[in-house]
Amino acid sequence: MNDDQPRRGCQWPMWPHSSRPNHQYCGERKRPESSYCEKHYALSIRNPDEEPSRPFVPRRLAA
Image (tube, rainbow, N blue to C red; front, side, top):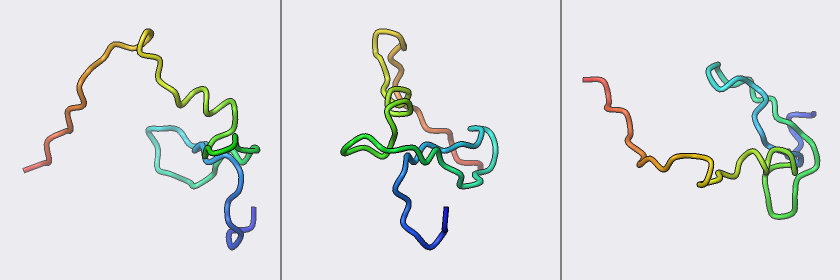
């Protein structure tokens, strides 16, 4: 993809969560009104019946 062109495809990051971003994205056709393709949109939606509900607690900043 040409870096000076606006990104038009799926914006799902293609690097491992634990590594530094390399700014490579899926690039497949997006769903209407979404940043993701059908496959990644489905992965991005949480199912409360399958996941336990836990409150978000941010990590403390290093002193």
